[in-house]
Image 1 (tube, helix red, strand yellow):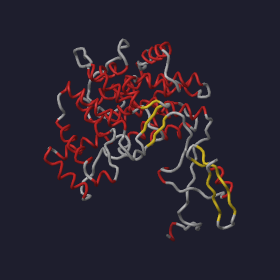
Image 2: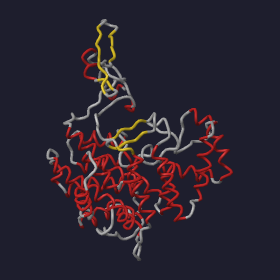
Image 3: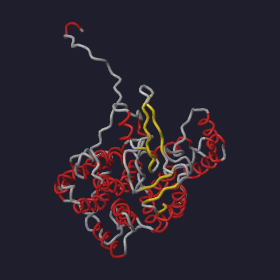
Image 4: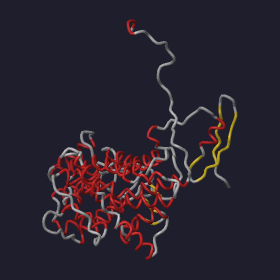
Length: 421
């Protein structure tokens, strides 16, 4: 039996039955009965703006799958570049496909020398790394004008490879500019995560990448690779729907991520833990949250109404990193806070469970990343997801995004001369 809903226009008595498909109803059918009547949905919380086969997110049951593969299996067994291939191509690569993909990305890591020198030199010495990243991703479009030929799938993939390959170089160059250190060129003998860590932290002597750091970096990038129709992904699709080049669309996605409501949550967690200050202050802080006097960061999620599956994975990765670096002094506070919240009916009844941001900042800081780099790290991981959605949107020949509005301004009125106002 086909599931459906029936809508009735009480002004006329006319009714229309609309089938329910894939958990949604077609707005085109709604318009047939009610032309000029729009859904009012600020934040698009109950509106589907896309059909996508990339990521399945079941927030009620804490499920996240890329192309059908559970995030738990990918984080345990896969690599970031393999996951990137999966997101963009729809299937896991064969050995030959994987070798070719990794080789292609590895050999597109360098930036044009004029771009590297001129673009970064034009920014103030203490510019925020995320500001540099947004600008320089967009700037690449001027070095690759052929990327504007978005009707050719092979050209789209060529520039997707370039973006994934160059993100660590762009990111580390932005960081090193912000702290006055010389750029470190990519080493194409290293894997993706190790090359990034080396370009980030090498000063003088060769930087030896600890295996625990390399694996933690892989896991963190995999966990951030895609997350369905979030703010930045939706931005990539909306901007891309105008048929701009991929560099401009991805820069817009970076800009959306730059906002503290989206990409800055893990930094906010560390600031909260700093404010708590000590193990003994956790209980008073919990009471302050319940009284409405404090904000609990890193708990709950816009979509997940259960435990964020990424949080469990990242918590395990944290212990491997701390075994190398020693315990982050904020970790004991975080563990006590999690324990207190998960045993308190106030938080349980509101389904406030730790999300991925609760532990990621602790790992990043223990590995040596400054807090102003956290969102940049997020952007590196999310790039293949953004590109996959941009590419899918073009394959679907989606119309240019053009939402409606409900006008609430003044009615028609006549112009008043300046002297009469």
